[in-house]
Image (cartoon, rainbow over all chains, first blue to last red; front, side, top):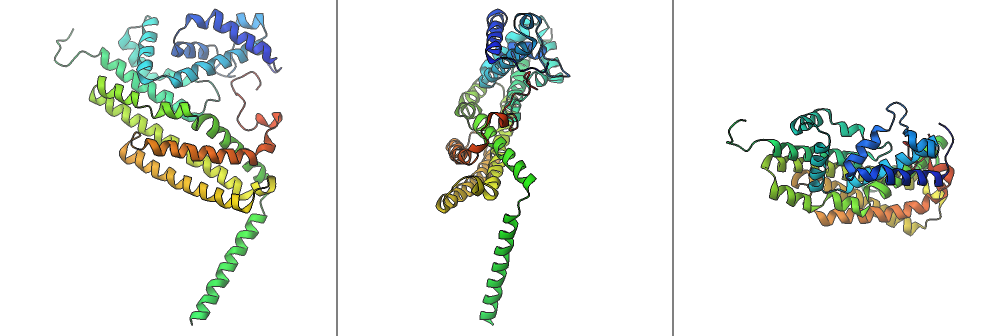
Amino acid sequence: MTSIPKRSDVVAAAEDLRRRTLIHLPLALERMIYLASTRDYNSGLYHHEGLASRYSAEAACEGLADCHHESFRELLAASLEDLVRQLQAYADSTDTLASNFVTTWQELEPYRAAVPVGTDPLAAQFVFSNLKVALAVFASRLAPPPGAPPA
Amino acid sequence: MIPLLLSLGLGLALVFLLYTLVRRSHVPVEGSAYQLVEARGSLHALQRELLPRDFIDRLFDRHDLEYVHNELPADIQRLFLEERKRISLLWVQRIRSEILNLMHFHRGHSRFHSKISVLTEIRLAADFTVLLVICRMLEAIFYFRGPYAAPRLVYSVAATAARLCTVSEQSLAFLNTPGLRTVNGGSRRGSATI
């Protein structure tokens, strides 16, 4: 994958992705995780069969990268309250037990690998920090109130 | 005795001045290129990442603090304040470091690439010095009193840094060619162009 795609193809691929796929993912957090999952861990390049067949592998890759940056920017702009809401909604959508979700995310911090390449380190740190606090808020809501009898 | 000391002092001052001038006139060529690219990178980081108003508004947004204070338990309040303090310190330290890069660039190279009057250079030097001092002050305030203690100073630092960026941008304008954009960190490394 070495040729440089036309900008118009990249814009069209990104728009196609937004219209067909990302529209079903209303949360910026969901979109960021999904888009990160289309990226190869070794090469850092994005792959999407459907988009690549409609445009080109290169245009699809750049379109996915553009949308990934866009979702990260949205997450960066989200308030803490909104982030807690997004995290809870995302956890609900995964069909995982909420307490397991929180434990896994607190231990593995998977969001650290979901940031687009080329993101400013401070912006990334800010999002990680907010997600860490949001997870603590989420965990505190799952914990039984003090004095409550054990289940 | 006094005239002798005065003469010695004057002599030493002249030697120091001569040494400084000699050092300035021998900037290695590869070092120059490196500093140019580094200055361009610093300018990019300041203008695109560290100084945009919406990022600063978000980082120091009091709604987050109110939300945490009004709705969450004490341990989460503590965690939030620790985290926000850490990020605020990183922010001001990054600004200081990028501004230092720009200052080194101006001190060593800008005179070769743009026509800056002596008066402008003196004003610029004063602005750089004041900004670096205020950054240190802000760092101390964040460290001892938390990230929400000096909102005016935060915006004052951002405004002064933005002004210095504008001047630096003019000095670095000759680097704004499409071919060099990929060198300065402006390209997206996650895209297909690499």
